[in-house]
Length: 255
Image 1 (cartoon, rainbow, N blue to C red):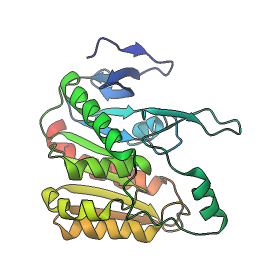
Image 2: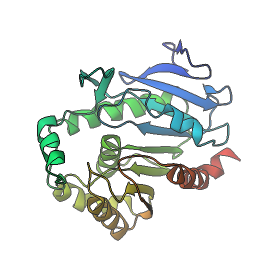
Image 3: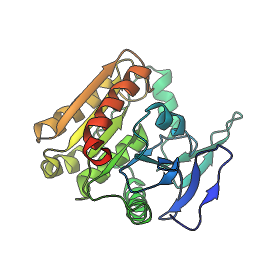
């Protein structure tokens, strides 16, 4: 384990630095990331705190050998109005987003290649490299995923690198950089992908998630798509189905 480990107030969780990113770690033989089992890395969305998805990891109730890593995005900012620290993988135009919401318009992002996505991807690559080394992750036994902006970055990294992945989890994400992603998707033929999206999502349109699903599946990825009657969230039915998905892709490593 990394020497920069520090105790958290929440018992059974540790904080580490991987590739320059602060991350919460839990699970494993000691409940704090120990052992040599598989690892699930989950990235939070825009504006969340670095530990936003930790309760979600506990709710999945996977076998003890599975470790969870929750990196905090590198950009820290304040959303004001009494919110605590917010973090982002890259910044977005909040005024543009708020105008669209006020007008009831969905934001079309398929043609966008965010300026900060490439630097965020490089930081995440360094983080995953360090996670694999420090936690002794068995080859091909890492699941990568995230929520919203974290899902976008996870998908981007999966398509632009050849890192072995046991699975990819995209929760309320969307299609970005379509012209760049489209010729890359065939490299991930056979990859097991779990996707979920709310049919009333006011931030990222459900139809764009369907387009991403079709792009991945059309190139040979094994996609499980879970729509739900809800908005920009992770409801319990999604947690339940994701638990089954993760159990299936990681079972050989935790028996």
